[in-house]
Length: 256
Ligand code: ZN
Image 1: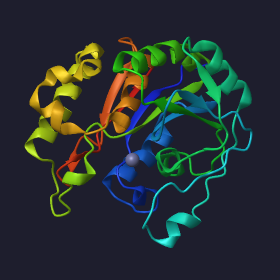
Image 2: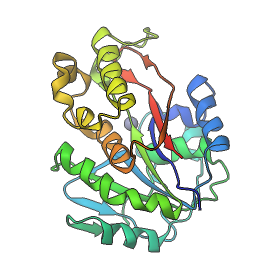
Image 3: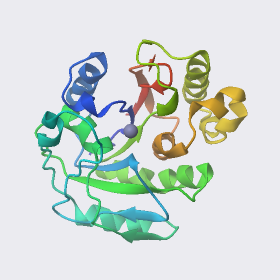
């Protein structure tokens, strides 16, 4: 079996589920060119919790955890099944405490990306929450503990944004503020050099790190993906851009 990819996607606006643009074109392409996984373990920015939780339902519910968007978005169905065995395999592998919670399901961080990559919804998806009380090192370590799942054909998907500050968004701006570009490039250089620890210790980027995000939930999914990656992977940078001043859309695919 081909080792499944570890993939970080900058998801941006939920509208990317239904709008066609340069970013979603790339997501569609990735779904076509990456080795097809047996199942997907998704770490979404939008399930930010106290403690770590996982859904083990064979029929995870799709949740519409965003407000003020067109009705079309709330009508979008992504009926992927779950995978109880995978969820319990994750519980076994992660050495910190983790519990089952099926009240959440699949949120838009997961389905807005997967509905473009795998529009048939024919790959099982399990979602893992992000413990807001855990450190960057803890998130990276959990990614490490999950890395072997890739050999079982499980894609580790992180869905967030490396720079994410809704309060600073400038709707008229096509690129990023200088600090946003600087931080995005700092992380990109670290990843391309194989120095993942620099992404874990991102504060050492200096002032740009203080401005990149106010809360880390959109950044943390990257740390799981980097934990699940290793230097023997090929790495592909895609959608390498900041938009609207304070959002990075940059993504990374690690694959054999
Ligand atoms: Zn988001």
